[in-house]
Image (cartoon, rainbow, N blue to C red; front, top):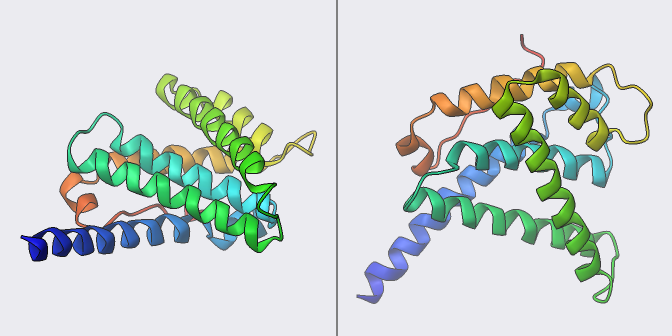
Amino acid sequence: MFKRLFGRERSNRTITDALYAEIVAAARQPVFYSDWDAPDTPLGRFEMLSLHMFLFQQRLHGEAGAAREVAQILTDDFFAEVEHSLRDLGIGDMGVPKRMKKLGRMFYGRTAAYADALERGDREALTAALARNIRPDSEAWPQADALAAYVIEADNMLREQASEAILSGSVRFPVAGAA
């Protein structure tokens, strides 16, 4: 009994680790930072990873069973990595919970705005939300439209992927700037 239980847990961890690695790789595509001017800072990388976590979560939204479990594990992993990154940046034990709460609000606020724009098919609203969240320091961010096109392409590409493939540890994102 224990072998079955722990064997399954190890298998699930392998799957979720593979999915998380793909999400991180997609968020770290160099074109985001070099050509599209996303800030290559801890906060900028948080924004890009949050965007890709949102896209993955959006794909599994409404599914039950193993898909729901995988989505929750990956969300937990994401926030554990964020907390670890805060500690690596030198934030002390007293400051981490306050910053985690703020980053959690930021993540869920952004995902709500992105989801609303995607569901309405409103590229202009998506572009504005991306610019507001990823480059809040800029009056104008011309590359936001290219990122919005990527997000729409990624959303469509993820929807076409079979749940079985995703739940076996394989998820694909588009190559940014390839179109």
